[in-house]
Length: 409
Image (cartoon, rainbow, N blue to C red; front, side):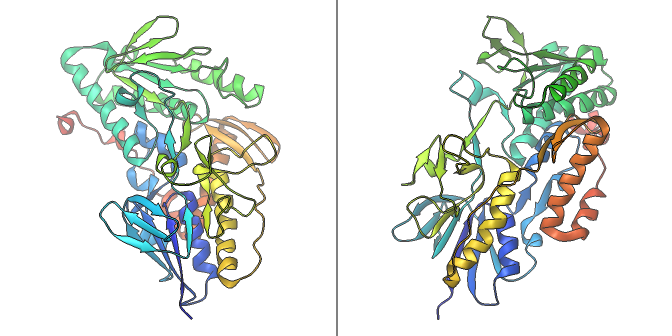
């Protein structure tokens, strides 16, 4: 009997964890599985703020996908998806290559939502991918270098839009990185500004009040100018304008104001709602028996009115169910419903502080930061076992400690 073909689009949390599950569950020669991703690396999305600030080396945040795939059951293809023909069951890449499938998994992640604010798309830096956050780091280095020549204070004003989970984590890393860069470039730290702008009335909307208070006190204690109940009206290459008319001279606006489903999927004949693909209780695209969708682009309703948020925790748990469901589909067995188990949330504020709630326990400070490390270690364990955990946690060197002014010229 001809082997069934499974195509997985996207090498993020959903795609990689599903691939690892298939490696463990599939028999030899039972199916032909191909994972397609635009890069050969998988990046740990929950650590992208560290890439943006330079508080972690590249190899701490990225993992080589072919090395993660432990067996010959999964083929890896580097390529960018152009379109999908669901009638012909065909995936087409931008280079013209095509791949037939019997079962397809859409796990293409998110796009940044700029809400149509003038200048954001063109001028703001986005926490979108490894490359986009790497660009933030190089931009920050350039601002320090340029300031040595022109003394333009706007170069040392670093603004982050959004004080939700991602924004606060970015702020925490800047609090750690900026003073170190000041030492490296021999610039008084008093000449720098870190600004956090949030449309809601407080940081970390949705978090417990104690976590909000701890975070607010922490960032202000470290010199962050916190602007809540404030919206950005416009962004240019050298300034941002607030909704009250105030203009802040800055060359750096890091945008963490919101996410949406992958735009590629909106151009396909899929059931789209709120920019995401509607899926059933088995993680199949509604109305399709052989197409699954998980992660940030999937709209999975936890009740009649609420959908699951686009988080790494959701994507990983969906992948852990999607893998077995794909195997069951191939074998003609019954699929099992996806049940989400929220284990908690921890937001880091730099290396030594965090806030969150884990299994109902409210935590903050150093203990929460350690718990964040445990959560990261668990994911690495899922991907590669204890050896990968040890390997990644051994990488502690920080890029900003190596920066030299001469190297940046």
